[in-house]
Length: 202
Image (cartoon, rainbow, N blue to C red; front, side, top):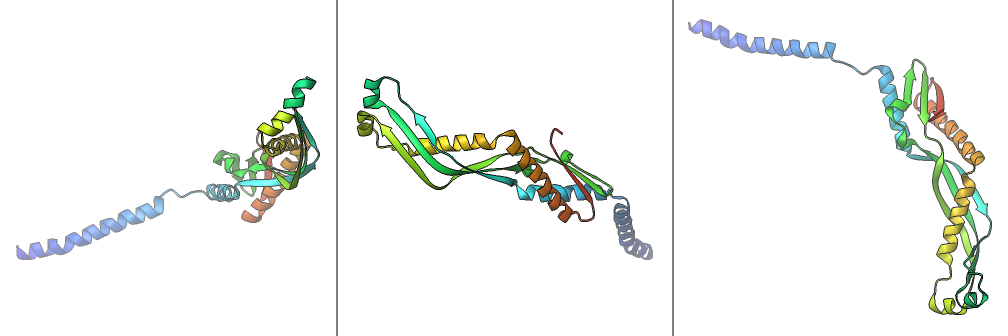
């Protein structure tokens, strides 16, 4: 009886270890593994998201703006009229937000990669250099308001510069440059593959 207990005591751990090794070996052999294409798509998506907003085109505008707040009534304008004339150099940056590229926008097939990217949009606009402001105001407006019209002038300059940069031909140029830049990036990330970059909606 003691001998039987000894055999059971020694054999049980061996059975448990053998069973565990069998389960582990089966898992290693049959566990699902990501396909090479899926792995490449994930790598590409990560590389694009890491770049964030990609500025692809910068435009510089330098033209005066006028903000006329005259009422047309000479007597009223003598006291409260206002005409702001300003000039400054504005820089406007366009590009694409690569953070908006989703998994469905990346396709990897054999040796070809196809990626859909957003259309070019405004990134920012900013004043470059000094802002010259001339403000012709009525008598009482000068006394009651210390503001020289700087903020209003800058806002109008930004508005007009952004509108000028939104012209179709300039946005199209930013789109083309974006495709070139993303193509170069992906050729570096996935060397040896053909890369095709298209705009969303095409």
